[in-house]
Amino acid sequence: MARLGLAAAVLIGLAQGALGDLQTCGQAQYDPTQYVCWDNQFLCPITAGEPLSYCAGACYSKFMYTCSNNVLTLLPPATTPFTLTVDNPTLSIHGKPVTASGLHWLLDGQTSSYCPSEVGSECPPGNTTVIVASGGSAAMSVMVPGGQQVYLDPYWGVAYTQAHSATIPPGSTTTGFGAYEGGGFVNLNGNGWGWVACPPRASGGGGTAWTLVAKNATNAGILNDCPAINLKINALPSGTVGAWQYT
Ligand SMILES: *[C@@H]1O[C@H](CO)[C@@H](O)[C@H](O)[C@H]1NC(C)=O
Ligand SMILES: *[C@@H]1O[C@H](CO)[C@@H](O)[C@H](O)[C@H]1NC(C)=O
Image 1 (cartoon, protein in one colour):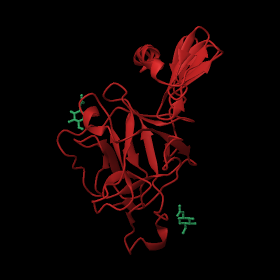
Image 2 (image 1 turned 45 degrees about the vertical axis):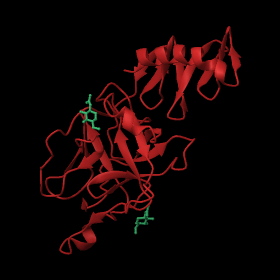
Image 3 (image 1 turned 180 degrees about the vertical axis):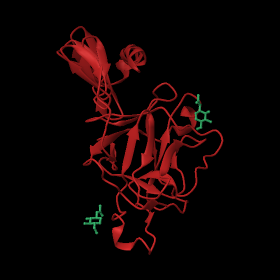
Image 4 (image 1 turned 90 degrees about the vertical axis):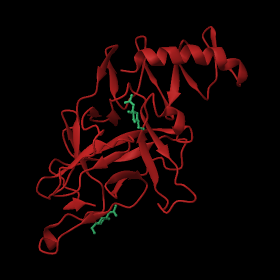
């Protein structure tokens, strides 16, 4: 999806490279904090802390693609439930989980869930945030009848419906999610700007959790303080349910 955009980014990077501490890649010079050189010949950008891989003329993210016999191929869809972790080795929250709380996905927070007393010991532990995806949509992996659908709220944060309610605010987006086996959970809406992690506000009462936002052409300008991340899929056995319901 982002292949043309990435090629353009390489050209811009070369033009700006004179500012940094340069290395050479074949005939070209590049800034190693922003690019990776493959086979002393091909430059790919580093995005969200991931040095993009190279496949027969294209730079690609391992969170979405694989290169087999020199052909760039989408990873297969994730067919089992999964948890998600933040991936960007340059950040302190690298490896920390996506956590459901307050009907939103946070990063490195505490999972909030509820188990009715009449269900009691039949409830899953409810302390991890488990997700299922198929056909471009996603849901929380819960027992509560009706389930809990995942959507982008009107601010492009990731939200999920309250148990026993199908209500989704106007302006939300319920499709366009890609979940790739051995890869990541990707927002395919808005031309592949990817996810960003917004740090906790010093003044806010929201604790130490970071906020997850899907970037796009419209909101990119106000998200400058929020670094890009990937969301890595950690597959769980088929049928894994995370909670009775997430709250
Ligand atoms: C969740 O709870 C279970 C059962 O109490 C426990 O074994 C597990 O370590 C907990 N996991 C996390 C991530 O807290
Ligand atoms: C981008 O996200 C903002 C919310 O942050 C939303 O209002 C806007 O409609 C989105 N833009 C596009 C092009 O989808």
